[in-house]
Structure formats: C-alpha cells, structure tokens
Amino acid sequence: KKPHLGTWPGGRSMLDFVIFAATFLLLLVGAVLYLYPASRQASGIPGMTPTDEKEGNLPDIVTRGSLHEFLVNLHEKYGPVASCWFGRHLVISLGSIDVLKQHINPNRTSDPFETMLKSLLRYQSGLGGDVGESCVRKKLYETGVAKALESNFPVIQKLSEELLAKWLSIPETQHVPLCQHMLGFAMKAVTQIAMGSRFEDDQEVIRFRRNHDAIWAEIGKGFLDGSLDKSVTRKKMYENALVEMELVLKKVIKERQGRSVSRHIFIDSLLQGKQSDKQILEDTMIFSLAGSIITAKLCTWAVYFLTTSQEAQQKLYKEVEILGKGPVTYAKIEQLRYCRQVLCETVRMSTLTPIAARLQELEGRVDQHIIPKETLVLYALGVVLQDSSAWPRPYKFDPDRFNDETAVKNLSLLGFSGSQECPELRFAYMVATVLLSMVVRKLHLHSVEGQIADIRYELVTSPKEEAWITVSKRN
Image 1 (cartoon, rainbow, N blue to C red):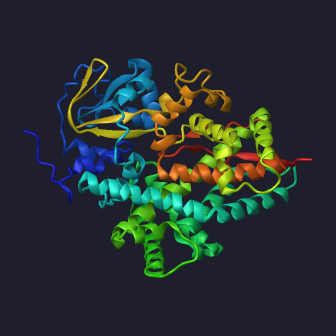
Image 2 (cartoon, rainbow, N blue to C red):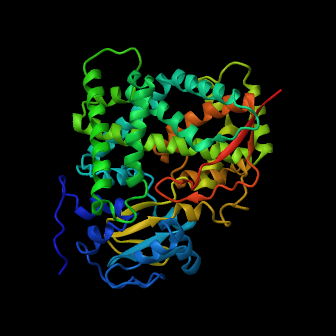
Image 3 (cartoon, one colour):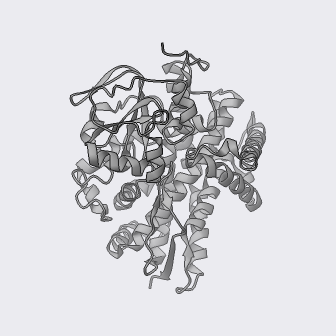
C-alpha cells in the first residue's frame, strides 16, 4: 500500500511541493525515496535500471558530475524518451524537440524555475490554491517586472554607462574579470529596479551580494550533495543570509506601503495587487535571486561568445550604429533584432538553464510510450539545445541561425523566447540588450589566447572559472 504523503495548504502533495527541488538533488533520497516508493516497472520506456536498490540512479548522477551530464549520456544511449530512477521513483526524461512538443502545455500557470526556487527555499505560498489564484499571481508578477523595466530604463542606461566607462579606462593589455564585473552590474540593476533607491548605496549592494552568494552557493546547485544539513557552519551561514535578506525586504516593503513614489519599482506592483506581506516578500526574494543570477550569466556568456566572433561583433555594431548616435531608448529596443539573435544564441550555446521539470498529474502519452500518473517528467533542455537535428552545427556560435523562423519557434517552445519566457529572463534580455548596444559601439571585445570557458551545470550555467577578456577602443 502506498504510504500517505501528507499535504501542504491548498491540498498539494508533499511530493508536488518538493518535486522541482528533487530534480537536482540527492536530498531527494529523503524527499521522494522513502515517502513515495513507486513501482519498479518502467512502463516499457527504455532506460537505465537502478544502480542501487534504495538510491536508484542517483549514484550515476554524482559520477557524471551533474544531472545535465547524466541526461546527455542517458539520451545518447536510450533515445529521446528515456527513463531512470530517483530513489525508487520512476523518472521520465524528454530529450528532443519532437517529444517535447507533445508534452509541453503552453497554457501552464506555473513557471518551473520559480517553482524550483520556492521549493528549495521552503516557500509554500503560491504553490497551493486554485488555478484562478495562480493565474492572477502570475499575471501580477509578470506585469510588475514589465512595468518596473519601463519605469527604470534610465537606471539600466546609467549602470551600463558606468560599466562602459570602467572598461574604457582599462589598458588594452589588462585582463578583465568578466564574471565578477557582470555579477556586480546585474545585482545593481536588479536591486535598484526591484527594491528602489536604497540600493544606490554601494554598501547595500555589497551586503546584498554577500547574502546572495551564501544562499546561491547552496540552492544554485540544488543542494546537489545533500550535505547542507550535515554541516552546522554551512547551514548557519545559509540561514543567516536568508534572514538578513528577508529583513531588508521587510524594511523596503514597509517604506513603500501607502506612499506615493516618483519611480515605480517591482515591489510597488505587488503592493498594488493587494498581496499579503508574506507573498510580496517571497516573490521579491525569488525575483532578486533569480533575476540577479540569470542577468549576470546571460551578460557574461553573451560577451564571452562575442569575443569568439569578430563577425558577430561587427554585425551588432552596424545594427546599433543605424539607430543613430544617441543612447538606445526603450522604444528602440525592439529594432535591435540582431542583438536579440545574439542573446538567443547565447542562451542556446550556454544551455543557460539546462533542466526543467513537470509532475505528470494525469496519465499521458508521448510517441508510443505511456507516462504513468504522478511521474516526474524532466525536460532535458540542455540536451535539446545542442541537438544537431534541431540546430545544425550546434557547437558553433551562430546568431544568424535565428533568422530561421523554425529556430525561433523551437526556442520559444523551450521557454527561452516569446510568451513562454520567464519574467527573470525577459528582464535579463532587456538589461543585456542595453549593455551590449553601449559596449560594442565604443569597444572591441577580445578573447584571451588559450582560454576556453568550460561550463558548470547548475540551475543556471556559468563558466567553471573566471572568464577573462580584453577590450580595446574603437577608432
């Protein structure tokens, strides 16, 4: 007999609450393995048999180094629909455009990246409740991001100009620490646009970054090794950082409540939407964490890949020049079509967020395969983004591939473009567009000879080590 799981508020099962966290972690051994023992029958779907009676294929994931690298191997061996075991729980992974088209629901109300973070942070609000409430909350969140971007466009311009001025002052022979600069730039943008003028103070940003780093060091890898609870020092550092960030957010919420303000920020939209203080705090925390890391890594990878292609740099430069000598305005952003192609190709080449997941709430079918009810279904986005049948010459940085409408539709299907973009990625696209348009107008970007940026596969990919570049002034 299947043991009772217990429920969260709103009637959602415990498995449903932790399912996205479970995608990445060996903490799942506790969350799924003992709480939700499933049949050992793999429903006829090809795949790996369990390596360990209790842990399933979790040891194989550890051996491969990341879930993404494990899934690459899984799909190479067993094809686009493949199975494996997380503990005693059957998991189905989908690794091609064709099978994902059959499974993805474009009318979904939850965002998998946001749900993952909420699960990892132990946040429950917004995960329960009915579909109507979820739709309202999602709309409010998306509108808040869009309105904050438009109202704070001058902030993005100002921060981009500051970074450009810094790079213009650097000697041509000096190496620029790209990851470090982009993380600082992204955090300034996110904190000022989400939480307001308090973060014009560099000391506030430094405190935010210290706490952000401590939190992301754990949730960024999805508690991959399950060791957080075993280390008193690490756990205390993580919990203290979370408490400090929440205290700052509570202060900002209190400052903005019921006041007329000259510049609309993200929190203001949540306050106007009559959300509870708890929901506002959690949504702002999610946006601050995810917005910072996605923006930083998108900008990092975009600049890095541009250093590998002088042709792409020149095309981008010509596009920006056509708009005139003044700064790029909010109204002109849509005209930078090649810049958007550069960013789409950056997302694809870097496999920016390599995994998404869904819980199969009802029995479903993909090709000839039956997916049982309550099965965890992984979307192996990193596998699909480098599939040569969908992307010719997949390891070549080629923004021109997005001249093809099929490539645009494929990226949209995967959630990286169009209506399926998560709000944090939409924010990152805007910030990166402004930054790139300013930088390429004034500077040539150069790679450092012999450097290859290997990818670290976590919730958001990053270079394994600092990515160094050099810059030189355009004539």
